[in-house]
Amino acid sequence: MNRKYKTKGTQEPTPRIRVAREHYERIIDLADECDMKLIDVLNQLLDFALEYAEVEEIQIPVKSLRVGGEKDGDD
Image 1 (cartoon, rainbow, N blue to C red):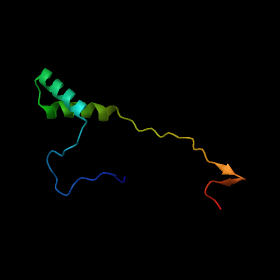
Image 2 (spheres, rainbow, N blue to C red):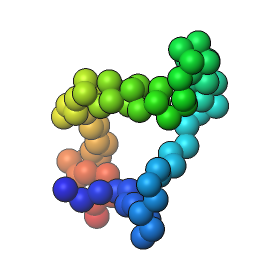
Image 3 (spheres, rainbow, N blue to C red):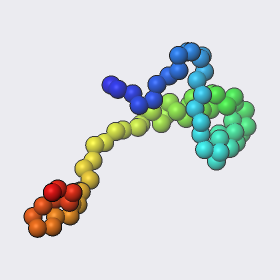
Image 4 (cartoon, rainbow, N blue to C red):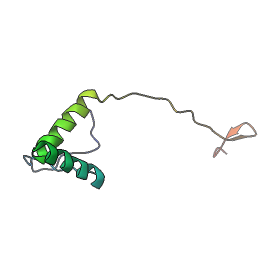
């Protein structure tokens, strides 16, 4: 599988991923409420999401303009 994103040359023990501020705030709230470390809460959330994530191929209809029987852009 070709990856769009690659890991950096240095293999950090805990790589970093940016998240939206509102998600970060909610994770902090969960960690505080459950008296857990942020990393533990985040790992549980990611484990759950990855377990139930599915990739589904869909087809999107494409419209094309034809003038005089020719496709747009054809000479």
